[in-house]
Length: 264
Figure (tube, rainbow, N blue to C red):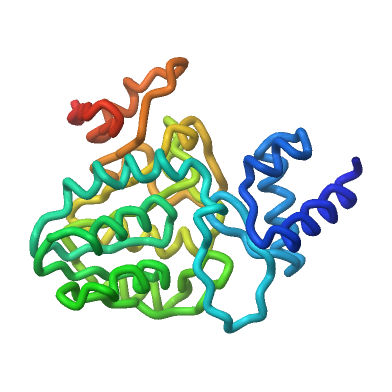
């Protein structure tokens, strides 16, 4: 199947199902997930679909508010496991910055259902606002900026400048890749600029990344490998990987067995 034929096929599937995972398309078309992501990025640039974390959704008219379906989120159980571990690090009276990544959204759901008191949460993600708005005792602040519907978040100078002038206790964010020697990276440059400010504005930085994100890198780097990330929380270890470099550079936490390795 030629590239254009494949992209048209993918577009038709998305329009029919409304939301798909990268893994679903990879299996159906018998191509790599990297190829699927590249095709989805091109289709988004052609304004034919909207990318989400882990998949894509059909293109809705601009201005319609939508919530990313769990069907479009890969490895949801792993993300929930990571979120449960991250929730243990949320303290009463914390001021927190959060992005709109799918794993952080699972953390937001736990916060909304939990009993942490006196929290102030600042975010560029509309999904975070929607979840936490149910708790009247939590102060929720959206930082403003230019709306990017494909990531359900705001970006740009307004968002960056607002965050740059903050000083919070903790930042929780997700990434698309973590690679030794390179760092933490994502696919979207505008979103990356916002995450850089989130990292700089926090006393402690938590990256939530499932096991599939390791030894992977993307163009938009948000932090060096030996940078300002304090905690890296994942769901499990991959048997074939050496995690020693991670343990030496960050407080490395594995959620499935309660393991926590402090930075050496």
